[in-house]
Image (cartoon, rainbow, N blue to C red; front, side, top):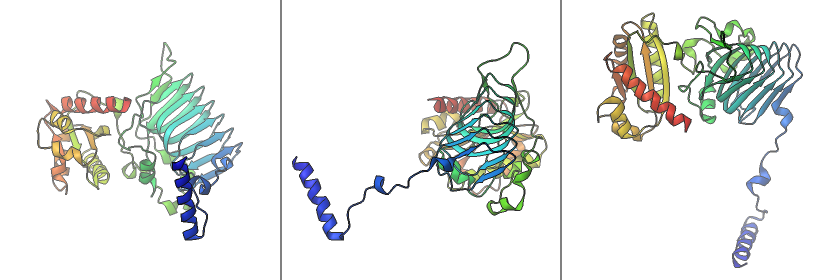
Length: 347
């Protein structure tokens, strides 16, 4: 009782000093109208939610036909039900994106978890932190997320997602068929802008929207399509304030310098000093683990080791880079790192 009395007295004193009644955060919180986070029954329509208009809320898309929908903001989770013949872009989503009973649609999405059920004839350009899951669905095609606009990287951060953790073609099918497959990977030649013509008009220019692979916030990775017989090299990029931009420049330049050099896998994870020593075989890099996460990049292709080393020559952060270009050990070190990253993300 005494504690309550003193608290009440303190509140009264504060009110008397300011002349205003004390306000609490839950009293001033803006009331959310769920109608602002729902597109339903669209027919031959185009809808855009601009950056800053969703701010981590849940969003629902339902019963839409022949429409184009762009959710250009970070979101908590998204439910897409009973949509057909639609083109849908969904910005970085912290939790899950659920597709149910959807047909003849094309999506580009970034999320923590991606699930499809009872759907058919779907193309998805995907960035997903976990394995995509499909069930009772047929004729699905998966490609790598390829998009840039001005606030997209910030939205990834707000959603708690890394653009380097992408399992776009590591799909788990709960209902596999005996002969054939319910899903397949799209080739890099299948461009997002070929399917989303509305992304090009002038109304999108104010956000500097760009769907070219080289501009994408998420790097294009080959993933499970890698060819184990090809030359490979392994790069660790330790944390600096410019690290993500440095990684994209390294990837872009390496893949441009020689045709056939490709990024196979990328992962971002926090590691200890002991882990750094284990992955690199050296104690020199242990001190860098205290500053933040590390990004691992595995390249593949003829002369990829020479190409990546050449790209790194003029890097302003050479001390924060570790490159294994020995073909005998690069694959092993890459396997150690990526297996560790997968284990951490599954916990």
